[in-house]
Length: 520
Image (cartoon, rainbow, N blue to C red):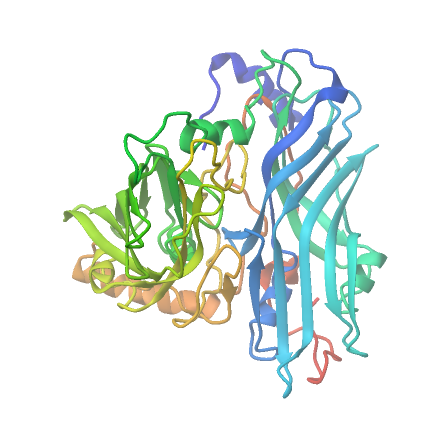
């Protein structure tokens, strides 16, 4: 989270309080030269729809694709904003990567009557009007016909009190009311009528001007070169490497627990670790590789610390990866208030091949399971053998090889406390950047470093949380602090009472094969 500006920023902040928009001063740059490069969009689609899909009627699930992640009160986070911004006219366009796939009402042949994918959302604002576009693939609830449509104008965005002109190095829009369009209703397989409120939309996008000295954020690719790649130095001797990175998100339900209503916590990255939304990157790996023996050893930089209520305090650093006989182990130094232990093997994963291609060794999203010592490190939150987030590894053997780029969340990547806990995945399921799922209520019940009394108290809280997990408070809340050099706007209100509460009681009839459909 970026800190508040110094005293000289009080005037813009005061203006923000009066008008709902903070306009920062920035060196003049031609509007046509300003591009959007990096950022994120947070949107729950429709929270009552999420509840319906994973509830007792549809008995379905959702999964994430393309590096999308979850954040806060069961919102989905889309990443790597790209587009343009004209600070004179206020015209803004930003497309985001990632998607979410909803399925429900499983049929005997294994297909689903409810089958909807929303991906690549794009926000366009011009002339005081805003529209949310997205790629949609859906199965019609009456005919079963599958339709794929690109960049459908899915929802109109409420911009009351928002001025987009004159911004600086970022554009921040919070809680914009979203209303389903007629085209969106058709693409939504007819589950909702045009005019239905959807969840509000929040986004943060970095704006980059042309030429040096603009004060804008540098290219994400350049930043990543400085932190994890692009080195020109050669290995000291054959078999050694000095440029590698490992990506691991721990476990999606763990991240949701940390920022959820029980722990009400956060995580902080330091020593070069980076946040990719659905994963964390530990960079600057160095080590050795033996092609004949198919072995690899690497140590990485970066530290992550999870903190929250009820004594939650867990830090991981000194991450190491060792590969032997097609099996990989990810270890780390584990620190909490009671224990400091080095080189703890946390997860194991399969490695099908270590053969380099183009000077680069890659292991992509290898399924990972928790070790017995890893289970102890997490305070018994998960059992040994639990499926954790997958592990991805990239090792550059040649000076010219480039590591895979991380999803770009923009300049403000802090994890914010949530107003609710998202549905967790089952013990046998795997949460991953490309295949994170929600199908049950599994989530950590016992945080790290509890006293006996705190354990009992948290279990009681946890039992209540299961009962109300899909009842959400104000949708789309974003606790990120306003940045002084940004266009920052916040629209009041939500997408409608039942959408925020996620209830089933008011569900009208006619969902496929059940006599009901998602609540409106």
